[in-house]
Image (cartoon, rainbow, N blue to C red; front, side):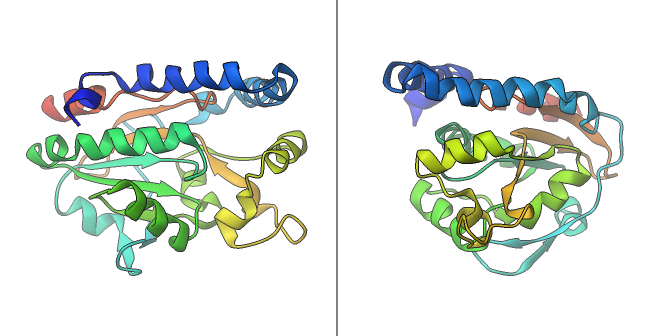
Length: 229
């Protein structure tokens, strides 16, 4: 754990990118690169809820307890840090989840409550929780409906759907227990990887999300925001 704490999250993500480019054919990578560029060009990053805005309330199911978790109840305990992630199939997301695991005690010392939200089913979130030894709640957001309220949700385009299918990543199954043949549009919804810090008045103190899934905010940035409250 100590070694991981000494390496920035972005450095760890950049290593994944370097390894991927060394192993995957350029024509395959081009599909993902084009989809990332197209998503950025929609202006989605400009629409993300900004610092100073009021955070929307939500209730989502917790992976460990299978009970509903209400944002108002979380905020009654302290400032809330919400990390939206795409799924356990994404090595960038897994690396980020583990980074937050390593910083969880730092968050708790600052009185903050941390939750991570994805469109995965509760079952998939539970697998994620157990596999990576996460001490914080993973909440299931079917169809990325809460992500939509934070303005970070998008639908995977057809070319990218075919790409994921070709590399055996079944996002409809991960998100809704569906096959490619009976997948709904909602099962193809994902959030941008994004982090929000919300104070106990429901005011957003920090907001950052990226159309490029290879880029994530550093935990140190969020800890600094909490220190400045």
